[in-house]
Image (tube, rainbow, N blue to C red):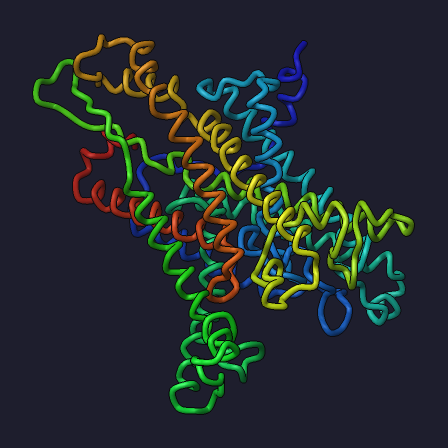
Length: 489
């Protein structure tokens, strides 16, 4: 008896959100999406009971928070991290063909979805338990422990229980949006978090804490309330572009926005014609960013898990060798884990402007490692993404064949269509994945408005663009109900 027969009783009984029986009106989809978004913002502002007074410890996910969503110390502490990590594991197992699941088979689809949920639960435990019980990421309140007479260990158990509930909630919130709303919950939560940072980076005032946003800063510069020195001097010029003026951050943000929108519109269009209906023609677009930028979530999540391992080792292993990792106030400052940490800002590499005291050769090596990791990882995960989501040459050829279309000048045969698709899809997938990785690193190195990570900005622009296309498609189907049959109701 195979693993599927053994695990089927468990996987088929995993709780799930029921699919709609018929067509969900567009307004109702928007209502579900807006409701989940409001719930997400509400939960990110609900602080977990039992945390030490004055807030939680340093946010380990701070540098990855743009793509993992959630909020430090809140019910949604873990964000979409467990979902993404479970997806990485499933992609690797599926890519190595170790699962033996056929996603076209309804029974195997149920098993796959159940296995994904089970893995998410496992990842919530594997991530949340060390975060609560090891280190000072979420310090428990001694006062609460004394008042409840359960000890610090008891309070930590309560904190983990709340974190676990939050992880399960975000899993089902994602499923609700995917089945009843517009787009996906994972994409929606990323957009929400990054947009919040961008708006704060543009409009926040110093009185609210931290550095003022771009617009208030320049209002202060024009009115004389903010003194940045003469732009004709090296110090003043540096302050205008790299300091309070944030000109370089604005240029980088606009550049990344423009590049992603342009890349989404660059495509190779393969002509199609209907085999039985004369004059019925179409085109199959192979976009430059064919696999979208979503595989970048997987790459950054893998980096986040590597850094999390380093933090745990630093807290548990008092004699950890310096070559493996050197930490100062919880931040990695040397060793292997420092080289594997992604470049997050200008302060990580601009030694020639005095932003860091690290050796130039070490900084160059770290930048090259980050570039290699992101470009190669982006290409590899893009290939996995295409193959496991039914976007590969074989799956695409089968879809075209089933729709009654064919490529003019070629025999109406799935193998023939597949060979044509193999000329474009694999190459475009690798190029697009590598390009997205390169853009993510460059955006991090140059900085963006609101301190948004390059990957987070790329994801937000791309997901928003696709959300716009999906909304346009939904509106078209509402206007012309017969179009639902073409898109697949």
